[in-house]
Length: 288
Image 1 (cartoon, helix red, strand yellow):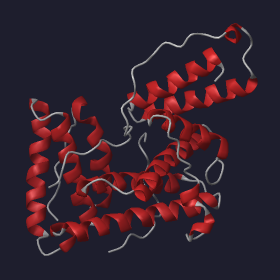
Image 2 (image 1 turned 120 degrees about the vertical axis):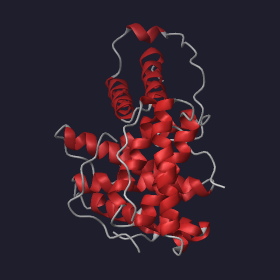
Image 3 (image 1 turned 135 degrees about the vertical axis):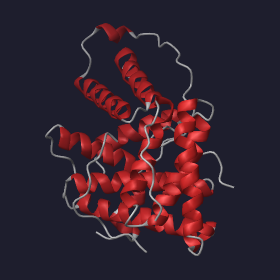
Image 4 (image 1 turned 90 degrees about the horizontal axis):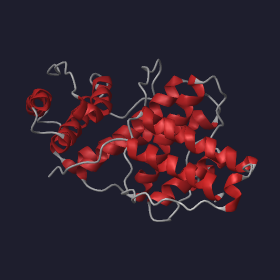
């Protein structure tokens, strides 16, 4: 496999680091995954910044590598055929997700599980290379990203995570996503329930043991950015209860929205951080 160059990402291309890192980690395990992650990174980079000198110094080497890699793997249908490629990526993402979800539900909390959730979400992003992803992938992707953040923060802070989807925090997570989607809230526990037939990003460290993976293009959406447009901020008129001592349950929810804000900032996701801060402020001002 042709060697990929060392690149220094300028601030404008910082979101590419998620995909380039995933590609590097898959270089020897699955060159096909590495190829599509880098192609996705190139598309994203062209969308973010294709004019600056600093961006060109990154995008042109990626483009050159992709051309050489495609020539080298010209007999591999998972590179030359979009349908085969899409199936290959989806299979890889689902194997990672299923392994991580099984380990998480068994209360096996470690960096390997965090990494598997994180990488599965990245590969599900890359699936957008072939068009809009289906509802099942979209929900699993959102859950994988949330779970990776949740587990990472718990391990970082010395807290014991809750196995599976924690009801209270996931309800807040769903509520925040619903507010961003015009009030439509989805239940992200259902797709992963045991009766559905299944078994059983700060910088994430390398996995010591990994789940075994199986052996046009349009502008894409950056990793860990919300899919919906956040509405303009409208000041909330404070209620009379604002000057009273808040209910303990309200304080608890506000604290969780603040934790979601910090998680979003860890991924440089400013719009998501703003959204959760506004939800926290609304709770404090209105109690709703």
